[in-house]
Length: 77
Image (cartoon, rainbow, N blue to C red; front, side, top):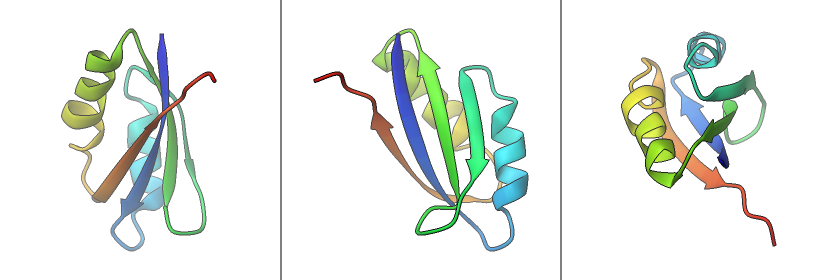
């Protein structure tokens, strides 16, 4: 199982709507509004890196109101 945090910037005033929509996507464990340089932080999980990439590109980035994403896979050192 691969876990990742997806840091999302949204259009002004869209963070709550973006987080709510993303929270309903299969593979998303949580989606929360935050303050700072990013507007929403998502915790996602997938069976492998390829499925994680498909989740981000095909599902998350397709949500209206998103301007930029940064995907940070979790590593165990």
